[in-house]
Length: 319
Length: 316
Image (cartoon, rainbow over all chains, first blue to last red):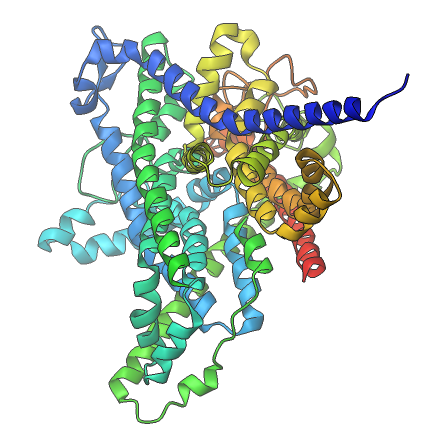
């Protein structure tokens, strides 16, 4: 069989065309998967929404096998919000310190080990942090909690925040573990953003007689603040969705309280812990909780991605 | 992902510390503030190092015992059927983790690389590519438990008990890996110089041939290291597996090499199940499984690091 030049050309074009279709399909899977996630999960949640109505979000009782079933998840939303808040409050200063130390202070030889240290924290699986938290940390940290609680006893606001200590499995312990887990995410994005700060800006600040800290607050931070806010929000999204570590250390007793040392429950933790014994109604309610969580993280991540994209664009313009 | 990028970008010159500290004419207050803030920055490094050290030392010291007593039974025996029974055996979970993660990799990596090739070589700055890039970020932020629920509803539910397989777990893990692979691969493709593509076009190569024989091979080390980081991340996931591979976290004790049929288990599931137990015999197995899982994840990360280091040396 002989091939003419034209045959070869059309064959080549055919191969070229089909390759472009394949890669386009590869890219489109992301769009398709996200759409299917949204559709299937919403579809399965309708039972729960039909039973509970809007009370799903405002009700405080969750007894899916009762007659009639009570499906209120407010306590779990509270738990998710509170643990994520504790995690953010603790993780942000540490992450910023880590990112600034790595980029601005550390000598050249120390930079790579510091980056590796941060990445190493990210490699430890969340369930290992959970195991460590429940067996090792929770029993030991109660003494510290008791000290803080005794110190704050009687003080107006602090007394109710750092109140009675239970088993050590609490909002606070969950927040602590979450803080460790989101630190590498915030740190690595903050580091990248900070590194885009032009050397000339920093040299300029130093030439004007600024100390290193003044150089950081005067030149580096104004340049990077948008990206850092985005990084923090990505960390928040991760903290809200973290399941296993929280499920193990939060103590699993739903409560709305200002006491950080009390045990509570969060959306993902409830889904994981109650899944095994769940009947059909309960499964629908748990999937509806998943949907709530999905929407919450979606909002946070949309905002974060928009902020990071906008600020990187502006920085590229400036550089 | 980030570390790969850090190592490929050239380091900026830093003013030496001595120069900064010897500044004359700086008032005491400003000098103190600078010193205090530098101290706090160092303290945050110390805190993270201490916490990581604590976790690792605990896991190693508590896990080593069960892994090495009666070696190699930890790796060759099935998991004891009751929590009360003392002693090793974690083969079922080790096999489960390996087969589900491997299957997830086989699904996610080709799709992710194809997607990244579309974004960087075909779509570039057009509206659809920009949308996909945005959605990749969104997908990376979807909680892993939601991925598990999704696969449960989409795949397991229509198949009832038969749906609970390693394959279902692999689907959920693949969903988690996909955005990571896309992002890492796109970053690596971006680093391939345009003149290599131009040279290939000038020789008469088509776009597909250029991509397959010039662009991807050039970026391959970086792509592989990005994929390995995604694998390391997926191998430690627990939440997506709860709904997809077996009825409960501790339901399966026997080794199942077949991803396509029969329930399975994983190291992460065993850690989760044993962490909830109060018996020392079960907790010991939990620590052992944690040590095995961390070792596995670190191994992947280490290989990824070595590969990216070799890549940056080659391109410099």
